[in-house]
Image 1 (cartoon, rainbow, N blue to C red):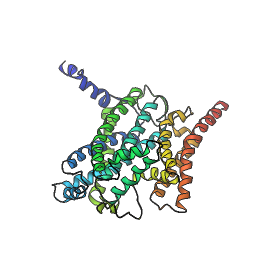
Image 2: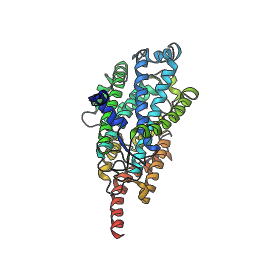
Image 3: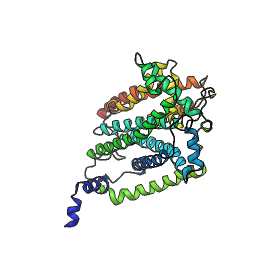
Image 4: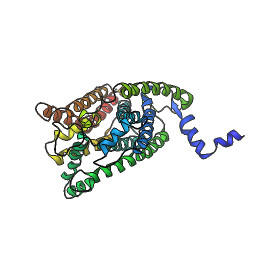
Length: 383
Protein backbone atom coordinates (compact mmCIF):
# COMPACT_ATOMS: atom_id res chain seq x y z
CA UNK A 1 0.00 0.00 0.00
CA UNK A 2 2.84 2.38 0.84
CA UNK A 3 4.44 1.64 -2.53
CA UNK A 4 1.19 2.41 -4.36
CA UNK A 5 0.72 5.66 -2.48
CA UNK A 6 4.31 6.64 -3.29
CA UNK A 7 3.71 6.03 -7.00
CA UNK A 8 0.69 8.33 -6.86
CA UNK A 9 2.83 11.29 -5.74
CA UNK A 10 2.97 13.90 -8.55
CA UNK A 11 6.78 14.03 -8.87
CA UNK A 12 7.12 10.25 -8.85
CA UNK A 13 4.22 9.69 -11.23
CA UNK A 14 5.73 12.07 -13.78
CA UNK A 15 8.95 10.03 -13.74
CA UNK A 16 7.14 6.69 -14.00
CA UNK A 17 4.78 7.87 -16.74
CA UNK A 18 7.49 9.40 -18.94
CA UNK A 19 10.62 7.33 -18.19
CA UNK A 20 9.55 3.93 -16.87
CA UNK A 21 6.03 2.96 -17.95
CA UNK A 22 6.04 5.11 -21.09
CA UNK A 23 4.68 2.90 -23.93
CA UNK A 24 7.20 2.77 -26.78
CA UNK A 25 6.83 1.03 -30.16
CA UNK A 26 8.34 -2.46 -30.15
CA UNK A 27 10.11 -1.97 -33.51
CA UNK A 28 12.16 1.17 -32.82
CA UNK A 29 15.87 0.86 -33.64
CA UNK A 30 19.08 2.48 -32.38
CA UNK A 31 18.39 5.70 -34.30
CA UNK A 32 15.81 6.45 -31.63
CA UNK A 33 18.60 6.57 -29.02
CA UNK A 34 19.83 9.95 -30.26
CA UNK A 35 17.05 11.73 -28.38
CA UNK A 36 18.30 10.52 -24.98
CA UNK A 37 21.90 11.12 -26.09
CA UNK A 38 21.00 14.74 -26.81
CA UNK A 39 19.71 15.05 -23.25
CA UNK A 40 22.98 13.63 -21.90
CA UNK A 41 24.98 16.10 -24.01
CA UNK A 42 22.90 18.99 -22.65
CA UNK A 43 23.55 17.89 -19.06
CA UNK A 44 27.30 17.62 -19.78
CA UNK A 45 27.36 21.11 -21.30
CA UNK A 46 25.47 22.70 -18.41
CA UNK A 47 27.54 20.94 -15.74
CA UNK A 48 30.94 21.69 -17.28
CA UNK A 49 29.85 25.23 -18.16
CA UNK A 50 28.92 26.03 -14.57
CA UNK A 51 32.33 24.92 -13.29
CA UNK A 52 34.17 26.75 -16.09
CA UNK A 53 32.26 29.95 -15.27
CA UNK A 54 33.73 29.82 -11.75
CA UNK A 55 37.20 30.48 -13.19
CA UNK A 56 36.48 32.43 -16.39
CA UNK A 57 36.86 36.23 -16.47
CA UNK A 58 34.66 38.03 -19.06
CA UNK A 59 37.04 40.91 -19.76
CA UNK A 60 38.86 41.57 -23.02
CA UNK A 61 42.21 41.89 -21.23
CA UNK A 62 41.77 38.76 -19.13
CA UNK A 63 39.45 36.36 -21.00
CA UNK A 64 42.15 34.63 -23.06
CA UNK A 65 44.47 34.39 -20.05
CA UNK A 66 41.68 33.04 -17.83
CA UNK A 67 41.10 30.21 -20.32
CA UNK A 68 44.81 29.40 -20.22
CA UNK A 69 44.64 29.58 -16.42
CA UNK A 70 41.83 27.01 -16.47
CA UNK A 71 43.87 24.76 -18.73
CA UNK A 72 47.14 24.99 -16.79
CA UNK A 73 46.44 25.87 -13.16
CA UNK A 74 42.93 24.67 -12.23
CA UNK A 75 42.78 21.07 -10.99
CA UNK A 76 41.09 19.12 -13.79
CA UNK A 77 40.53 22.35 -15.70
CA UNK A 78 41.90 20.93 -18.93
CA UNK A 79 39.34 18.13 -18.74
CA UNK A 80 36.47 20.54 -18.08
CA UNK A 81 37.50 22.77 -20.96
CA UNK A 82 38.01 19.93 -23.44
CA UNK A 83 34.74 18.25 -22.40
CA UNK A 84 32.87 21.52 -22.87
CA UNK A 85 34.50 22.44 -26.18
CA UNK A 86 34.20 18.97 -27.71
CA UNK A 87 30.84 18.48 -26.01
CA UNK A 88 29.41 21.21 -28.22
CA UNK A 89 30.49 19.25 -31.30
CA UNK A 90 29.10 16.03 -29.84
CA UNK A 91 25.82 17.79 -29.07
CA UNK A 92 25.48 18.94 -32.68
CA UNK A 93 26.43 15.52 -34.07
CA UNK A 94 23.73 13.89 -31.94
CA UNK A 95 21.08 16.51 -32.75
CA UNK A 96 21.82 16.43 -36.49
CA UNK A 97 21.52 12.64 -36.44
CA UNK A 98 18.28 12.99 -34.46
CA UNK A 99 16.84 15.44 -37.01
CA UNK A 100 17.88 13.44 -40.07
CA UNK A 101 16.32 10.34 -38.48
CA UNK A 102 13.12 12.38 -38.15
CA UNK A 103 13.37 13.38 -41.81
CA UNK A 104 14.00 9.81 -42.98
CA UNK A 105 11.16 8.23 -41.02
CA UNK A 106 8.70 11.13 -41.32
CA UNK A 107 8.56 11.94 -37.61
CA UNK A 108 7.50 15.50 -38.48
CA UNK A 109 4.19 14.41 -40.02
CA UNK A 110 0.79 14.79 -38.37
CA UNK A 111 0.04 14.59 -35.47
CA UNK A 112 3.63 15.40 -34.41
CA UNK A 113 3.98 18.84 -36.05
CA UNK A 114 4.57 20.58 -32.72
CA UNK A 115 7.28 18.10 -31.76
CA UNK A 116 9.20 18.94 -34.94
CA UNK A 117 8.70 22.71 -34.62
CA UNK A 118 9.97 22.75 -31.03
CA UNK A 119 12.95 20.67 -32.18
CA UNK A 120 13.83 23.31 -34.79
CA UNK A 121 13.56 26.02 -32.12
CA UNK A 122 15.97 24.01 -29.95
CA UNK A 123 18.39 23.77 -32.90
CA UNK A 124 18.23 27.55 -33.38
CA UNK A 125 18.90 28.10 -29.66
CA UNK A 126 21.82 25.67 -29.86
CA UNK A 127 23.35 27.57 -32.78
CA UNK A 128 23.02 30.89 -30.95
CA UNK A 129 24.46 29.39 -27.75
CA UNK A 130 27.39 27.79 -29.54
CA UNK A 131 28.16 30.96 -31.49
CA UNK A 132 28.31 33.23 -28.44
CA UNK A 133 30.23 30.52 -26.57
CA UNK A 134 32.81 30.44 -29.37
CA UNK A 135 33.45 34.14 -28.73
CA UNK A 136 34.29 33.70 -25.03
CA UNK A 137 37.90 32.36 -25.36
CA UNK A 138 38.67 35.70 -27.09
CA UNK A 139 41.05 34.28 -29.65
CA UNK A 140 41.47 35.52 -33.21
CA UNK A 141 38.59 33.45 -34.62
CA UNK A 142 36.43 34.40 -31.63
CA UNK A 143 36.89 38.12 -32.15
CA UNK A 144 36.62 38.22 -35.92
CA UNK A 145 33.79 35.69 -36.03
CA UNK A 146 31.82 37.89 -33.63
CA UNK A 147 32.61 40.98 -35.69
CA UNK A 148 31.52 39.43 -39.00
CA UNK A 149 28.37 37.69 -37.78
CA UNK A 150 27.02 40.50 -35.60
CA UNK A 151 27.63 42.98 -38.43
CA UNK A 152 25.11 41.07 -40.54
CA UNK A 153 22.32 42.61 -38.46
CA UNK A 154 23.17 45.98 -39.99
CA UNK A 155 21.54 44.75 -43.20
CA UNK A 156 18.11 44.79 -41.55
CA UNK A 157 16.22 47.87 -42.81
CA UNK A 158 15.67 50.79 -40.41
CA UNK A 159 16.60 49.02 -37.15
CA UNK A 160 19.77 47.26 -38.35
CA UNK A 161 22.36 49.71 -37.04
CA UNK A 162 20.57 50.02 -33.69
CA UNK A 163 20.55 46.23 -33.32
CA UNK A 164 24.29 46.02 -34.02
CA UNK A 165 25.02 48.76 -31.50
CA UNK A 166 22.91 46.93 -28.91
CA UNK A 167 24.68 43.62 -29.61
CA UNK A 168 28.09 45.27 -29.33
CA UNK A 169 27.17 47.47 -26.37
CA UNK A 170 29.06 50.25 -28.16
CA UNK A 171 30.54 51.01 -31.55
CA UNK A 172 32.75 47.93 -31.90
CA UNK A 173 33.19 44.41 -30.55
CA UNK A 174 34.73 45.14 -27.16
CA UNK A 175 34.40 44.49 -23.44
CA UNK A 176 30.66 45.19 -23.31
CA UNK A 177 30.14 42.66 -26.11
CA UNK A 178 32.06 39.99 -24.25
CA UNK A 179 30.08 40.59 -21.06
CA UNK A 180 26.76 40.39 -22.91
CA UNK A 181 27.78 37.20 -24.68
CA UNK A 182 28.94 35.62 -21.43
CA UNK A 183 25.61 36.38 -19.75
CA UNK A 184 23.62 35.03 -22.70
CA UNK A 185 25.80 31.94 -22.98
CA UNK A 186 25.06 31.17 -19.35
CA UNK A 187 21.30 31.73 -19.83
CA UNK A 188 20.58 29.97 -23.14
CA UNK A 189 21.35 26.38 -22.03
CA UNK A 190 18.61 26.64 -19.43
CA UNK A 191 16.22 27.86 -22.15
CA UNK A 192 17.25 24.83 -24.22
CA UNK A 193 16.55 22.59 -21.21
CA UNK A 194 13.09 24.13 -20.79
CA UNK A 195 12.35 23.76 -24.51
CA UNK A 196 13.54 20.13 -24.33
CA UNK A 197 11.02 19.38 -21.59
CA UNK A 198 8.25 20.86 -23.73
CA UNK A 199 9.59 18.83 -26.68
CA UNK A 200 9.36 15.60 -24.65
CA UNK A 201 5.88 16.47 -23.37
CA UNK A 202 4.67 17.12 -26.92
CA UNK A 203 6.22 13.84 -28.08
CA UNK A 204 4.61 11.79 -25.34
CA UNK A 205 1.19 13.26 -26.08
CA UNK A 206 0.88 11.11 -29.23
CA UNK A 207 3.72 8.66 -28.61
CA UNK A 208 6.92 8.00 -30.50
CA UNK A 209 7.02 7.35 -34.21
CA UNK A 210 8.44 4.04 -35.48
CA UNK A 211 10.42 2.89 -38.55
CA UNK A 212 7.26 1.75 -40.34
CA UNK A 213 5.56 5.09 -39.74
CA UNK A 214 2.27 3.46 -38.73
CA UNK A 215 -0.02 4.19 -35.80
CA UNK A 216 0.77 1.17 -33.63
CA UNK A 217 -1.43 1.88 -30.62
CA UNK A 218 -1.45 -1.75 -29.46
CA UNK A 219 1.99 -3.19 -30.15
CA UNK A 220 3.87 -1.34 -27.41
CA UNK A 221 6.42 -2.07 -24.70
CA UNK A 222 7.36 -0.18 -21.54
CA UNK A 223 10.38 2.08 -21.83
CA UNK A 224 12.05 0.38 -18.86
CA UNK A 225 13.75 -2.04 -19.08
CA UNK A 226 13.55 -2.68 -22.84
CA UNK A 227 14.35 0.73 -24.33
CA UNK A 228 16.60 1.58 -21.40
CA UNK A 229 18.91 -1.35 -22.12
CA UNK A 230 18.98 -0.48 -25.83
CA UNK A 231 19.78 3.14 -25.05
CA UNK A 232 22.42 2.04 -22.55
CA UNK A 233 24.36 0.41 -25.39
CA UNK A 234 24.17 3.67 -27.33
CA UNK A 235 25.27 5.69 -24.28
CA UNK A 236 28.36 3.53 -23.70
CA UNK A 237 29.29 3.64 -27.40
CA UNK A 238 28.84 7.40 -27.44
CA UNK A 239 30.95 7.75 -24.28
CA UNK A 240 33.81 5.90 -25.95
CA UNK A 241 33.51 8.04 -29.09
CA UNK A 242 33.40 11.24 -27.01
CA UNK A 243 36.39 10.15 -24.91
CA UNK A 244 38.53 9.55 -28.00
CA UNK A 245 38.22 13.23 -28.87
CA UNK A 246 38.62 14.55 -25.31
CA UNK A 247 41.73 12.50 -24.49
CA UNK A 248 43.43 11.92 -27.84
CA UNK A 249 42.30 14.64 -30.28
CA UNK A 250 40.89 17.52 -28.22
CA UNK A 251 41.68 20.24 -30.75
CA UNK A 252 40.95 18.45 -34.02
CA UNK A 253 37.44 19.97 -34.28
CA UNK A 254 38.60 23.50 -33.43
CA UNK A 255 40.59 26.14 -35.29
CA UNK A 256 44.28 26.70 -34.41
CA UNK A 257 43.95 30.49 -34.85
CA UNK A 258 41.80 30.61 -31.74
CA UNK A 259 44.92 29.89 -29.69
CA UNK A 260 46.17 33.32 -30.79
CA UNK A 261 44.92 36.19 -28.56
CA UNK A 262 42.35 38.45 -30.23
CA UNK A 263 43.96 41.30 -32.16
CA UNK A 264 41.65 43.91 -33.73
CA UNK A 265 44.58 45.16 -35.86
CA UNK A 266 45.24 41.78 -37.52
CA UNK A 267 42.56 40.16 -39.67
CA UNK A 268 42.92 36.38 -40.26
CA UNK A 269 43.46 35.35 -43.87
CA UNK A 270 40.32 33.20 -43.86
CA UNK A 271 37.59 33.50 -41.22
CA UNK A 272 35.99 30.09 -40.68
CA UNK A 273 33.29 29.26 -38.12
CA UNK A 274 33.05 25.96 -36.23
CA UNK A 275 32.21 22.92 -38.37
CA UNK A 276 28.58 22.75 -37.22
CA UNK A 277 27.91 26.25 -38.63
CA UNK A 278 29.54 25.64 -42.01
CA UNK A 279 26.42 24.56 -43.93
CA UNK A 280 24.54 27.68 -42.77
CA UNK A 281 27.60 29.86 -43.38
CA UNK A 282 27.88 28.53 -46.96
CA UNK A 283 24.28 29.54 -47.70
CA UNK A 284 24.86 32.94 -46.10
CA UNK A 285 27.88 33.83 -48.21
CA UNK A 286 26.44 32.36 -51.42
CA UNK A 287 24.22 35.45 -51.64
CA UNK A 288 26.30 38.46 -52.80
CA UNK A 289 23.94 40.87 -51.03
CA UNK A 290 24.21 41.13 -47.21
CA UNK A 291 20.46 41.53 -46.67
CA UNK A 292 19.81 38.67 -49.07
CA UNK A 293 22.20 36.46 -47.09
CA UNK A 294 20.44 37.25 -43.82
CA UNK A 295 17.07 36.59 -45.47
CA UNK A 296 18.38 33.26 -46.79
CA UNK A 297 19.35 32.15 -43.27
CA UNK A 298 15.89 33.12 -42.05
CA UNK A 299 14.41 31.16 -44.95
CA UNK A 300 16.40 28.06 -43.95
CA UNK A 301 14.78 27.91 -40.53
CA UNK A 302 11.42 28.95 -41.97
CA UNK A 303 11.57 25.94 -44.30
CA UNK A 304 12.46 23.62 -41.44
CA UNK A 305 9.64 24.96 -39.26
CA UNK A 306 7.14 24.77 -42.15
CA UNK A 307 8.20 21.24 -43.13
CA UNK A 308 5.17 19.47 -41.55
CA UNK A 309 2.88 21.75 -43.56
CA UNK A 310 4.90 21.55 -46.79
CA UNK A 311 4.68 17.77 -46.68
CA UNK A 312 1.62 16.54 -48.63
CA UNK A 313 2.27 12.81 -48.47
CA UNK A 314 -0.05 10.45 -46.62
CA UNK A 315 2.88 8.09 -45.99
CA UNK A 316 5.39 8.80 -43.25
CA UNK A 317 8.35 6.45 -43.52
CA UNK A 318 10.73 6.55 -46.47
CA UNK A 319 10.76 2.72 -46.33
CA UNK A 320 7.58 2.93 -48.43
CA UNK A 321 8.57 6.02 -50.42
CA UNK A 322 11.34 5.09 -52.91
CA UNK A 323 11.45 8.51 -54.58
CA UNK A 324 11.52 10.34 -51.24
CA UNK A 325 14.33 8.06 -50.05
CA UNK A 326 16.49 9.17 -52.98
CA UNK A 327 15.63 12.81 -52.29
CA UNK A 328 16.57 12.32 -48.64
CA UNK A 329 20.04 11.08 -49.53
CA UNK A 330 20.42 13.93 -52.02
CA UNK A 331 19.55 16.41 -49.25
CA UNK A 332 22.07 14.80 -46.91
CA UNK A 333 24.76 14.96 -49.61
CA UNK A 334 23.81 18.59 -50.29
CA UNK A 335 24.28 19.48 -46.60
CA UNK A 336 27.71 17.81 -46.57
CA UNK A 337 28.60 19.71 -49.75
CA UNK A 338 27.51 22.99 -48.14
CA UNK A 339 29.64 22.15 -45.10
CA UNK A 340 32.67 21.63 -47.33
CA UNK A 341 32.02 24.82 -49.27
CA UNK A 342 31.70 26.74 -45.98
CA UNK A 343 35.37 26.18 -45.17
CA UNK A 344 36.63 27.00 -48.65
CA UNK A 345 37.71 30.50 -49.78
CA UNK A 346 35.08 32.75 -51.39
CA UNK A 347 36.31 32.33 -54.93
CA UNK A 348 35.61 30.38 -58.12
CA UNK A 349 34.55 27.55 -58.32
CA UNK A 350 33.56 27.28 -54.63
CA UNK A 351 31.22 30.27 -54.81
CA UNK A 352 29.27 28.86 -57.75
CA UNK A 353 29.08 25.38 -56.23
CA UNK A 354 27.79 26.90 -52.98
CA UNK A 355 25.12 28.84 -54.85
CA UNK A 356 23.92 25.71 -56.67
CA UNK A 357 23.87 23.71 -53.43
CA UNK A 358 21.98 26.51 -51.66
CA UNK A 359 19.35 26.66 -54.41
CA UNK A 360 18.89 22.89 -54.22
CA UNK A 361 18.37 23.06 -50.45
CA UNK A 362 15.36 25.33 -50.90
CA UNK A 363 14.06 23.43 -53.95
CA UNK A 364 14.00 20.25 -51.86
CA UNK A 365 11.66 21.77 -49.26
CA UNK A 366 9.62 24.20 -51.35
CA UNK A 367 9.21 22.24 -54.59
CA UNK A 368 10.07 18.55 -54.33
CA UNK A 369 8.29 17.71 -51.06
CA UNK A 370 4.89 19.30 -51.90
CA UNK A 371 4.89 17.89 -55.44
CA UNK A 372 6.05 14.46 -54.32
CA UNK A 373 3.07 14.04 -52.00
CA UNK A 374 0.68 14.88 -54.83
CA UNK A 375 2.49 12.42 -57.14
CA UNK A 376 2.37 9.64 -54.54
CA UNK A 377 -1.33 10.25 -53.88
CA UNK A 378 -2.13 9.96 -57.60
CA UNK A 379 -0.10 6.74 -57.87
CA UNK A 380 -1.91 5.27 -54.84
CA UNK A 381 -5.30 6.06 -56.37
CA UNK A 382 -4.30 4.39 -59.65
CA UNK A 383 -3.24 1.25 -57.80
